[in-house]
Amino acid sequence: MMTKDKVALVTGSGQGLGKAIAFALAREGAKLAINDIPFNEAKARDTVDELRAKGVEAELFLADVTDEASVDAMVGKVLEYFGRIDILVNNAGINRDGLIHKGNLKNWNAVLDVNLTGPFICTKAVLLSMRQNSYGRIVNVSSLTARMGIFGTGYYATTKSGLLGLTRVTAAENTSKGITCNALAPGYIKTDMMMNYPEEQLKVLIAKIPAGRLAEPEEIAEAALFLASDTSSYITGAVLDINGGFLI
Ligand SMILES: NC(=O)c1ccc[n+]([C@@H]2O[C@H](COP(=O)([O-])OP(=O)(O)OC[C@H]3O[C@@H](n4cnc5c(N)ncnc54)[C@H](O)[C@@H]3O)[C@@H](O)[C@H]2O)c1
Image (cartoon, rainbow, N blue to C red; front, side):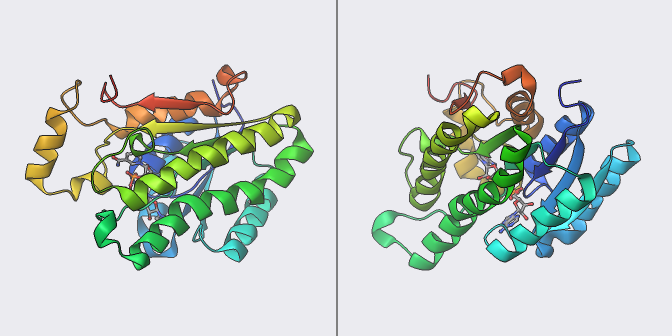
């Protein structure tokens, strides 16, 4: 079992990729702290119930990752409940597409807050106890949009590129303390985030993917599991591209 008895906090794990990551970590023996925003409480509760039905130790910790006080309180509660945090997956994210020359500052700030400030707040909050334990695995969910300039992704791509910087510096500052930090750069995944795209646009997009289809969340979750486990103990500050060949 790759994550036996490890305690994992996965942000935004009430649905989509975060939920798939939670299930992959749980399958390999981890105990799960499921986080989501209060707005998504019902789905997050279902995730916890589904995990418990499989015999997994899981608990719900609602918090908005953009709110430092809520995140600090959440991390305190997770530490109290499980005793430690071994794995943090910074998965919570939002998308607002828009051309830069028609830029909308409200959307820019919203995406920046969740996708970049959120991971910074959560990373900061768990690092103290990880450093005390001399152990940690941090996995940041970046994106293919951080690897190439894709039309219309200005706000989102900027945050996901910034997340690669956060990944490298977190790795540089903490690897000597037994903590690795890596990023995933997934291509297009079959979750609500993508399924909200107009069908015609989706068809055009899929035609550009050598694999000829979107990724299943589980296909990305297996990579998160690898980076969250001891199998990847000498990998740190790295970015793993998973995109069905989009970058070839
Ligand atoms: N779907 C894709 O094609 C794709 C591709 C590359 C990367 N990603 C990234 O994968 C991650 C997961 O996205 P998804 O596709 O599962 O989308 P999703 O919209 O299904 O899930 C996002 C989750 O994050 C939660 N969330 C949003 N704001 C939050 C906040 N402030 N605090 C706590 N939780 C919050 C949502 O409630 C939801 O549960 C995101 O970081 C996204 O940017 C997605």
